[in-house]
Length: 207
Figure 1 (cartoon, rainbow, N blue to C red):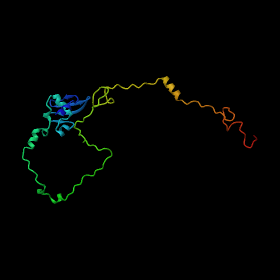
Figure 2: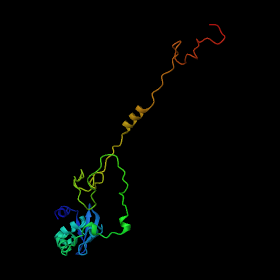
Figure 3: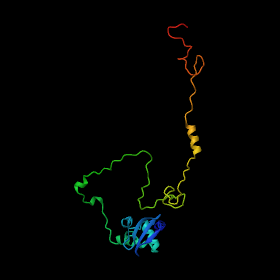
Figure 4: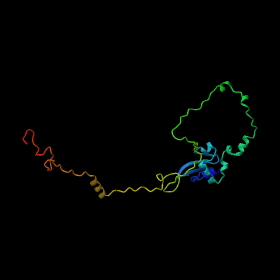
């Protein structure tokens, strides 16, 4: 019951009818609860026979006890009634009458393939169970349920527009530098290389 009360800190609720309450979260419709029929649009109220987080917020808003909306299977009166009759002993295994088809049946364990890494010993919690851990909050508004990327109170990002001077300087910096003129290795003059140097002797000529 204490866990149900701790989970009742749900978002706002809006009364539609006397017995029907709508739960909202961040302005969006999150669930429709009918307290008289003990139903919710998320279907967890009907399946688990326990109030879901939408129903918990509606019950707290209606100022009613949470125990009135829990299923009878969770109450101690149902447990006492289930064991009120006589419980007969099973008897010794030698006195059992087992069919031959069942006696000759050999049941093997299912095939198991070990996964890499250390095996997990803790069981996986279901969707309705409470998970211990830190709740993440938005760094802009401080509320839970979203982050700063999905926050509605976030200011639009102002992208600075580059000025004409910075654009010109960037273009000048990225432009190609002028090539240095070729210089001949033989005569040291510019404008030609060693293959086209006038000092190179012609083939078949005199040096």
